[in-house]
Length: 267
Image (cartoon, rainbow, N blue to C red; front, side, top):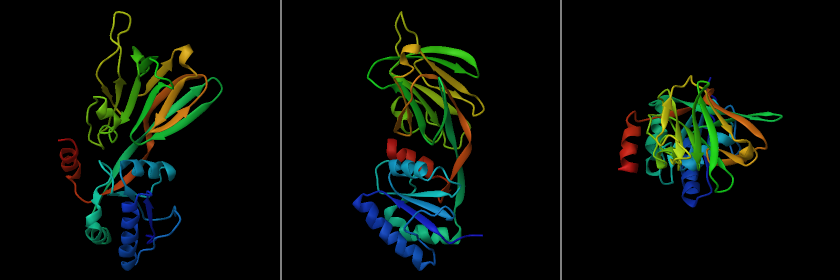
């Protein structure tokens, strides 16, 4: 049963705040309730801002089952389909049920330290690198088979949905958001007589695990970055990455939005 409650999560940008007030009025005119505080039993989460605001909202709400939709007041806006000038059309289409639901799988990382295990999730990517600007040496296994001893600035492990973010800037492939697969992309890999690292990204299936083992001297100096949020751990023995069973849902109003947006933003 629908609750009629719609959460609006907006950043502090002036444009976002103006958009939030206008959207609240339009939704209330249609009979929806827009609470001041986040309500877990809502029918919809509307995020106003750019992609950064969308990622922060997803993390802050702990990756809920409540669907998301984004209104773009930022720059790129890959997750933000709705333009701020189309609020009336958006509200009308939502009220009529004229949309589809897209399921986006989350990535997960198990951090194994000397004494504990930590469990992390991300929507776009994880990044593993040194806390300083020093080169890091990492052993990489895929499907529990050794692949390479990597040397360079770090590694990006990105989801399909996150392939157009940091991964793309580092030369990784673009994957459609619902494609079953994720990828490993190197950051400034070293290729010398002493060090040999794969120069291009690798796409692996969803059901494949990836393990990264830092050399002993880097076990307490690694950063694990989840969607731009830096986390540090002491005495990391192993990092295990795969696709989580958890996911978020996003409303789509234009089934061709991704390709139009890709061209508009990158070409």
